[in-house]
Amino acid sequence: MKRIRVPILLATCLSVMPEIVAADGALTVHANEANAQITPHEQGQQRIHLPALEFSMVAAFECSDGAQADSITVSIADTYQRYALDELNSEQTITATLNVPESQIAPLAATEFCVAGEPATEKSLRVPGVATAQFSLRCRSGASSSVHFASLALPLRLSCVTAENQESSADK
Image (tube, rainbow, N blue to C red; front, side, top):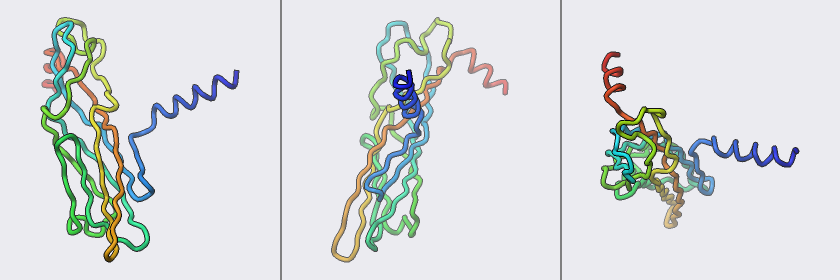
């Protein structure tokens, strides 16, 4: 009986871990959950097209052996932001917010969520990896440099916007 509990406990703990990734101890990244509101789609529609999304991430970094952070680049699909040495200001963390246009994220297959004419049983749906963020940290010490990479699956919370919950949110 105990043999069954350990794997179940381990699986439960791993499923609720926050979206945090570390690379070589030099770069640790965390993503906040993005939000998107979608309108009901027709029954049987296979894909939900997402609107433009705003992703917020935090990167903590440290260069080793007396090296200094030269730059950090964050990218999602075709959208990227580069933070140069003068923007880092000897800080050990950055907060990056990237606005990704709707055409850069693939449509989602969610046929049972937010269907027109159906009673809304679920008002929101969490999609754990709708896109991936890539981070690269360049450290420089004299004539030598090193690069550290990390990638992170980005979570998204979809909310179904119906006429009923639009009216209730307008009343507030």
